[in-house]
Image (cartoon, rainbow, N blue to C red; front, top):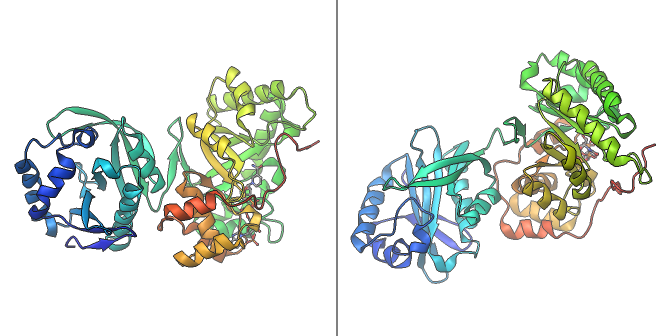
Length: 454
Ligand SMILES: NC(=O)c1ccc[n+]([C@@H]2O[C@H](COP(=O)([O-])OP(=O)(O)OC[C@H]3O[C@@H](n4cnc5c(N)ncnc54)[C@H](OP(=O)(O)O)[C@@H]3O)[C@@H](O)[C@H]2O)c1
């Protein structure tokens, strides 16, 4: 396809030509503050930028390269450029951008990157994108993460003159969104939450979820449905290796030996000899339990041993807040890989989420729809109308766009399918901000320091 002109809220994105060279040179290619983070070095003269523009102009019809100059609508000023090009190894399109220094921090990079991604997904039909950013440029990482890219390790990029530039690699996969845990295991961003899901139709609901394409099933000893899940898996004929099974040890079963027993029971009911993820369901059995730290540490030791024995591919926590994780980290041999918390618009636990991200622990949302209670919120409904999506899709998209994994529960196939269809649209920053700041809505009332599970 020929590079088209496209539009976002504040920008026109149009093909670059040699005539753009003087403004680009004056505005940013001659600026060392911009060049520092880019593959190109400072352009020493206008001719260098002209050479680059000649190359871009020649590529307007190249189906492996789409370069846009970003024109600010208010004053027709070119403020940046970027686009998509086939990566060096020819495997996948790579997204890149650069902006004049004066407009940094005003949301233009996110806006342009979003628009280019929509072009990639909707117009070019791409399913997977790559991006790199220099380690010294965290702002660019924040942009990529807002666009749904997932950090996929460190690498070395090279400036065009061969100078090494330590960088992070990011990937975006529309069909297979997953986090890479700190041990390399891939955790899908979307799973099926099974709490109470088998009450009415038994294993059939799980079979429906599997037929709708869910491969990650979240369960727990407490849900009393591991048997039905095991039967559904058997009936489905799906290879165990294709599935991602998560279960959890219940507070009344905590302790080293009891946890191991609880794990074996779950495996037996699920018809498997290993779990993909096993979590401590709650840090404490009750708010008055003074022995909770010792018990939680013993339980974690059991998880670590099962993990080291090859019985669990990843281990983690659920309902652990920073003050529960700190004493765990003091004695842990293996750092928790996941923490599953109640998170949804209206109950975002931002402090805990920040802490988990700082510690490299993947955040997963339970009750991502607020058990249905946030679906009718007028802000959510109006955002849904704006994007032509359902309120549930908006709530789930909001979380995955914030790099939070989700495990919604739904009973009908229609809802199961709709809840999966959240990877091909983007919420604009103002909508994310509105969802972030929704007044408290739909909180379950289950706080880890106030529950009593005895
Ligand atoms: N770690 C923990 O302590 C913990 C605690 C709670 C839950 N969880 C896990 O998290 C999972 C999800 O949480 P949750 O089940 O409490 O709540 P949820 O997923 O936030 O909400 C489920 C509710 O939303 C409705 N719903 C689903 N999709 C919908 C759609 N597209 N449109 C309208 N309504 C829709 C469902 O109705 P229908 O069922 O009628 O379709 C159900 O009533 C659980 O199933 C469980 O696996 C973990």
